[in-house]
Image 1 (spheres, each protein chain N blue to C red):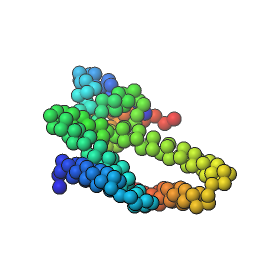
Image 2 (image 1 turned 90 degrees about the vertical axis):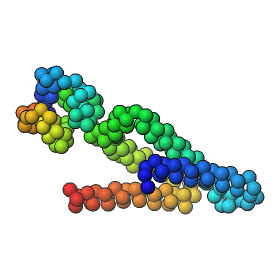
Image 3 (image 1 turned 120 degrees about the vertical axis):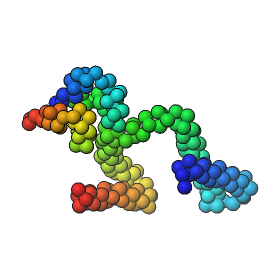
Image 4 (image 1 turned 90 degrees about the horizontal axis):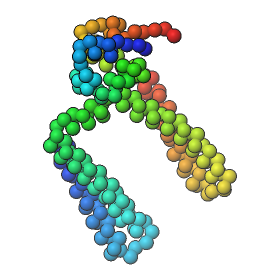
Length: 65
Length: 142
């Protein structure tokens, strides 16, 4: 699943460490999410959406294979 | 009881177990299982003392640096870390099922005592049975 996490984070000038601290996850998790290597749980997806003040579908792009 | 006192308690129990175990090892002329119990006491005491001391040291370090404690909690609860650990355990379990199956075959071919094989197979079946039980339980819960 693709996502706009890196783009949104950089737009707001936030560091990975800061985002990780706000979401209470490790920095490695943020890195993996941005690279698309890890898909978040629905709870984490909601936390991310709330953090950026957006809807989940505006951040995570679901593509049928 | 607080976490700190719990760790002190386990450390103390470990220390006592080592002392008592060592005393009976030195002063007992007994053989068989009477010799095994003090040895087990020393072994279990070492484990408890080691774990207790390491937890106490960890707590002391975290108390001096609260950021360290927060970092440890985040790393412990991090969902990606949890997924990684669970996946690793699942893979190890799948491998264990195959490896132990082969091991039992080898033991049977080596004509190892039947009691040993039966005990090992019983333990193996208990583990497989608990997996099936957990599957059924989780199917109902989820």
